[in-house]
Image 1 (tube, rainbow, N blue to C red):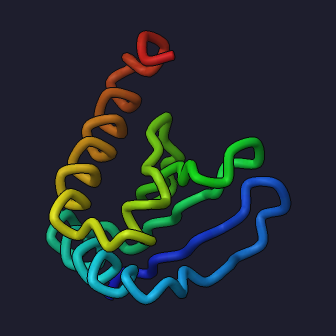
Image 2: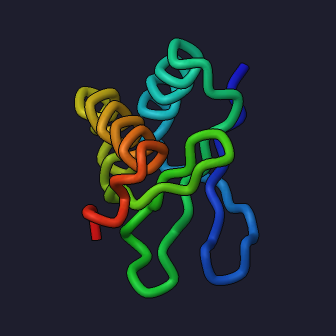
Length: 102
């Protein structure tokens, strides 16, 4: 089972995504992560913009973020695509292309 966490970038503290519409999205993230063999996924809340959730897949913190409305508005139909984009950002970083992404 994949461990999904939400953390504050400012202090590193973990928080719960308790919005009622988030449950279905979290379930879809869980299934996506298991299919793609990630043991943990972390969403880091940006210190300057609390609506940005920076994605970490496994040990790799990425230059890719998801808007918090994905969870608070229950956008389960788009989260798989967004996680695929995050995985693409991870692959670009591993290949050395992250310097072109900034």
